[in-house]
Image 1 (cartoon, rainbow, N blue to C red):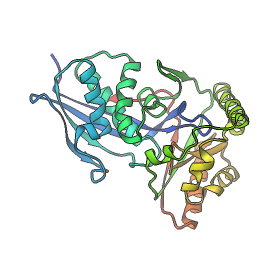
Image 2 (cartoon, rainbow, N blue to C red; image 1 turned 60 degrees about the horizontal axis):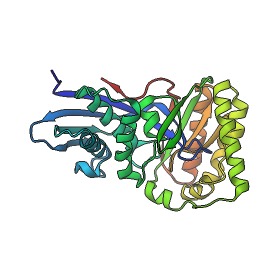
Image 3 (cartoon, one colour; image 1 turned 60 degrees about the vertical axis):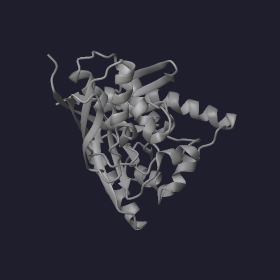
Length: 311
């Protein structure tokens, strides 16, 4: 017998990981988004409640990442089951830490459990990507996959979809500073170049390989040396107040490396201890305040194992 309701959460995530645009992301322990699903008899997918960013999110299911993920799944499964969605947003909208992805991930994970679908992980990621498409204008998985699976995830390919879990040997802490800015994800993607110099591409490939090697071998020096981006960050950094100083202030405070989280405006830094991560957060928060920019600070371990889960 099917349950009539279920609750799930999915964590925030950091995508791009500085040098790995659209192919590498990792999950955070907090914050997270929460979804409650209930079956209905009207054979419709409906959003009945949103808290948090309710004034900025559409109640129409097809215009909401959680709603669209469920619509996509039911369509592909040829199911006319009606679903009501309650969405509790704890991750700020447009923050650059996977807010839209977490909602889609929590929704599809809950649907799988509610209807006892036993979907493979790749299939859940695929449906959740249709939800992410609503927010970003494209299907990408470097927020979706970590939010669903936990840990650090390499998106090797989208067609066919192939993701690889990267084992992290280092015990890393992530500092997120979310300035009081909003950057539209679609716009942040639209300003990126469609072609890049070969020399920049070579440096970028080297950094991605070095970053993954550093993560798996607990080589913090290699991780830090690899956390430089020659493609997206030089352009997107101009959208964030004070970003020119962010990396240096983070490093001066003891961080291993720093960069833009996703498309921004959040910035992130990695540290090898919680104490250093808090110190970095304080320094970066003060830097943004010097630029008259209020901000929120989160400190979290990299979430090595836990992605979406049923409560």
